[in-house]
Image (cartoon, rainbow over all chains, first blue to last red; front, top):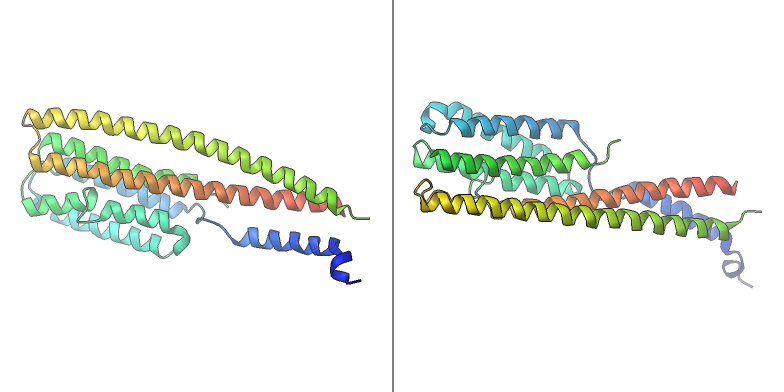
Length: 147
Length: 107
């Protein structure tokens, strides 16, 4: 009789070990990263303060606009660098910072293109939308598994 | 003698319990988050429609804000997908603990 048929118990043991090894190495998403969390919360505050200032033309805030754009790009590149398992967070940053979208990236482009101060009602609305967008990024990061 | 049958029976029961609990919690939370998002969108759209009618928002600004909600809906969906992946990882880690605990009883 073949050993493979009668001696099934050790095979089950091997299967169990392989299951542990596979489970240990197959995370579906990246773990919690305090740097990512801080970047998101810091940039949220910075973005909302800049939005409040957009009641004036963009020229006097050109340096702050450029600085925020650079920080957004840095955050996106940082998240991209974590690879495919970080795709949800990376895509969140892409939507938020897309200059052709209608959140922060799109707002900065609109403000500069129109080259004028924005209405209080619009600033209330965009502040709310951008704040919620950052909250999605912060929410996802804060729920990630901590080591 | 090692009781593999009992080992695998315990594992199977434990894994089903973990998966069921995580799945139930996730469906509950995702449904609640989805409802909260839709309610928030509805409230904002009502305010903006009124402001547009009153001339406080231009047509371009109104459209920009509404498109922003569309972007936010994509972000909400991505967040929920990410939270589901986190649940999968929690189940994975709970199963590793379960296997190690059950294996410990064998020796």
